[in-house]
Length: 113
Length: 110
Image (cartoon, rainbow over all chains, first blue to last red; front, side):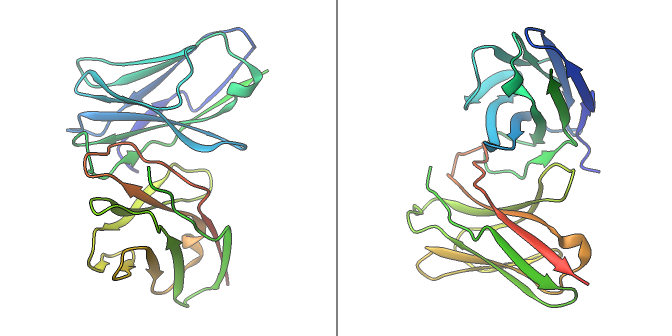
C-alpha cells in the first residue's frame, strides 16, 4: 500500500460525457502527478501540481483539466469523452516538486463506450 | 529528455540473479538514473536510483557504467513476485515528471 488513494477504481461511461477522478496523496506529500496508461501509448505524464499550483504539463488534452485543492487532494476532470480516452489513470505523489520518489496509487480504470 | 533503451522482455528462473540492462548514451551530467517497476494490475513502484556510483537497497542493486552511458539493475535472487515491467528512467536535476519508455517485461519461472 503506497498511501496514495484513488477513487473510483472503475468507471464506465459513454462518449461525450464528463467524469472526475479523485486522488488523495500520501500524508505530508505536496506534489501530485497524473499519468495515463493506454495499450498503444504506454505510461504518459499528464500534469503535475505542487502545493496547489500547476508545476508542469505533459501530453494533456485541452478537454482534460486538473486542480489541487488546499487540503492537497487533486481531481482530474475529463470532458467530451472519446473512445480513445479509455485507459488507466494513475495519480502519484511526492514530498517535493523535484527528484523525490513518486508513490503511485492503484489507478482508476476508465472505459468509454 | 534523454532517452533510454531496454530489451522488451527477459526471462529468469526463480532464486537466480537477474541483470536488467539499460542504455542511455545521451545522458547529461546532471541526469539521475531511476528504476521503477510495475507489477501486474498495480501502479508503478520505485525500485532504486543513482547518479554515478553503484547503489544498493533492500530491493535491488544498481550498477552504473563509468561513462554513465549504461546501467544495470540487479535483482540478486528473483522471486515470482518480481515478475513485472521494469522501467529505466532518466530524470533531470529539477525534473519532477517521470518519462516512461516501453520498459522490460521480466518473467520469472518457478
